[in-house]
Amino acid sequence: MEILVVVDGGLVETLQASPLLRSLAAGLDGVRLTVACPPGAAELIAHVPGVAEVLSLRALGPGTPRLGELARAFRALRRRRFHAAAVCCSRPRAAALVYFAGIPVRAGIADGASAIFYTDRIEREGGEENRAAVWLRLAPAFGVEHKLHQPAFEPGAEARRGAMERMVGAGFEEGERLIVALAPGNGFADPLPAVSARAMSWEPERYAHLCNQLTHRHGAAVVVLGTEVDRAFVDAMLLDVESPALDLCGDLAGLEEVAAVLERCDLLIGGDSPLLHLAAAVGTPSVGLFGPTDGRLRAPYGPEHRVVQAVPEPNGRRRHLPGIADQPSLRQIRVDDVLAGIEASTLG
Image (cartoon, rainbow, N blue to C red; front, side, top):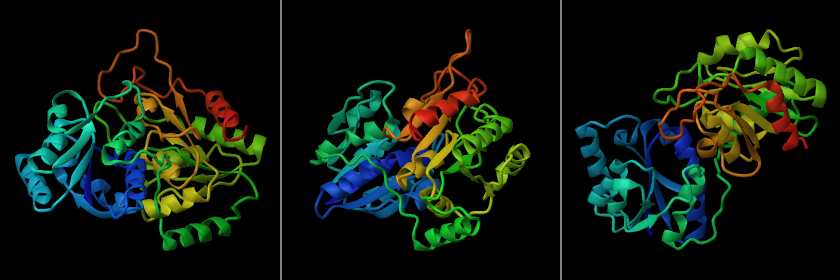
């Protein structure tokens, strides 16, 4: 059986579809899964177990696609023979693509105009439902009743070997003490409309204070993750960090190596970015800091992942974009709020 799973958006949305992919791969005998996604997510989704083929389609990226991009996406789907399709998005363009490609069984969320293109329509349970949970509810349309909620990502042997050499070489042995990964910058984050990088950032001084508290209270060893874009931010944080930290900012070749490092950590703390979902996919709990975006929708799925959401300011300006909360900044989140979330769950 050939099943197409269509995802549009960024890396976060792509990783949020991985529990559905795992459920379909494990629940159907002889299934062959093809994923259609934006070009920026194609390499990432290839590491999700059970995915046989990845179609990189510009028409599924952010923004309004050009007519030529839609035509190329249609031809890419039309020339293949799919028995069914699951659409992991709410924008009509993806639903229309699978409809006009002639795929006989089409499952998706019954949102507005998109609903007319589906043979199997799934109702949302609420506007604040986590997207991974929403996509998982598409599984019964394909006869899969037992849902495997845990996402999955396979970094590969080479990436795991590199992570082990870096961390063991720095004295970060698994099991000897708590290893906490911090992702203080926005280098890995998906760009979001109407949300500035500043609004998505927690101050370096607060990350440093959190790092020092984790070291003093729990003897934690800290690994710092980021891209070259985050270098100045990370340097500012490290000026106030009192204990040695393993600085891997800009030092890892790709998300496979990042995933392999996260796999050896006990916890990840960071803002709204694909790293939260990458940590979940390798079995590492996370604490996500959310301000202008809504952690209920965008955080990793599962009880081991905590959301610290900024509270809207009185008379704050409301936003009406999908996944955008009232509060336009992380500034209201205190270090004590994050520590309480960590100690009540992961360290409790």
